[in-house]
Image (cartoon, rainbow, N blue to C red; front, top):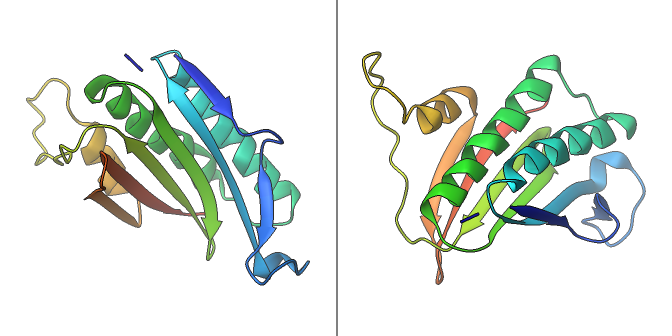
Length: 155
């Protein structure tokens, strides 16, 4: 089962890609957390909200749409990881080029399938919704498990 979420010490970490420059355009804003157990899903959503608030506090434009979509995408991806993969999952949020990259790693090598829209189907609409709301959605196998990544515009 997937319960606790552990953010890295210091919470949101800001690093400059160019080795320490201060201009916000050259900076990378990121946060990551390990998630274990289904109780971690709500904490993951809260981490996403805090991440967006920190980005806005640092002068980055964060639209109302992004404030709604990013926590929803985080919730769907973390829920799937907790439901279908044993053990820990890793969540990473990063601002990249005016967008938020949401990445979830889990221990299952089985890639998720985005099902065709079917109003008669009960359940299994999460990835369909994620794919519709994001600028891009990818799932890739890794040496251990897989990584699912969604890109959401902030403006």
